[in-house]
Image 1 (cartoon, rainbow, N blue to C red):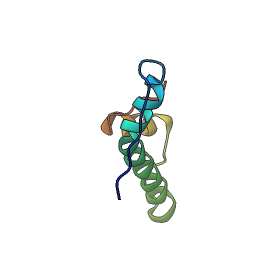
Image 2: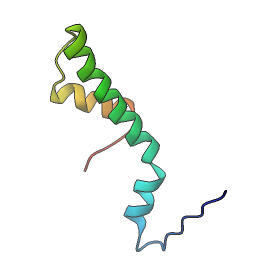
Image 3: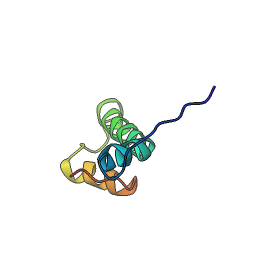
Image 4: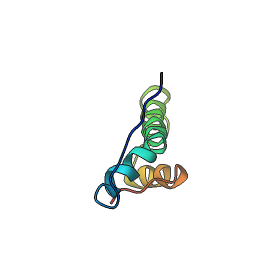
Length: 64
């Protein structure tokens, strides 16, 4: 099975960027979820705003 996604650039540039970076966002969310789990289940460090931004930086993701 093949899937082709078509974007009309530059009109749909934002949509293209989001689609092409989806795996990075998924990785970042997984890391955030794991940090919460570590805190809750294993009394790990709290998940703060700094932790959140550090995870985003590590995953090469920006929130604008």
